[in-house]
Image (cartoon, rainbow, N blue to C red; front, side, top):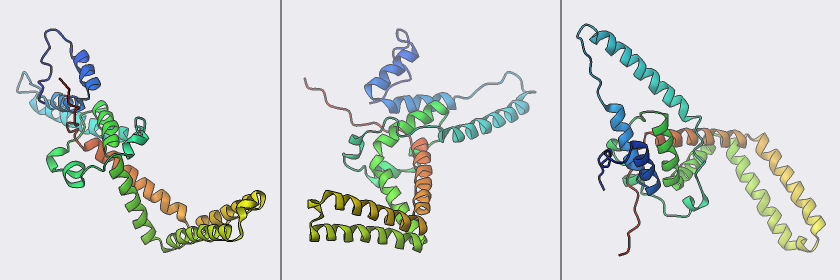
Length: 230
């Protein structure tokens, strides 16, 4: 569905129309409107001030883009995320997640960046989770000690489960609780000594940066609208 910037501009003010678009789920229209408003050319009245105006405009544009990039890391991308966002099918990596170069643009301001981040994180939550797992596996591959620590921790809990089933620790809650605490302490020592937490922090940092940048630069695409029954 294609809208003009505000087809009801004679009777409905822009803020009201934008609110209706947001409530109706047409967020891609708001995204396009913000980009169009930012790309609108400004006119100059005299030729003697053209060079000065251009220089000032470039400086303001650079400063604005830098502030927008910095403001991305002040957003909370998980504010509107729910468990239902992970239960649906994973969006296509080629057609939806990456798409083509025309599906990306620099956000015109903090408002558009926040709109894109909140919506894209919900839409591509499963893709971002898969990327985190991929980054974590790659980090473990680059840190052999952390990989050994992770495998050792998993093996420890497998041994604990085997012993619990073998000797029936479920019938002795006190003994089982003591053994659980002991296994947790041993696993924590293994993970800390072999720097598994560093691998986890590296994977979290890289995946969070990729998620924020992709969500902010990825244009909003039309979501599938529910069909109305007549």
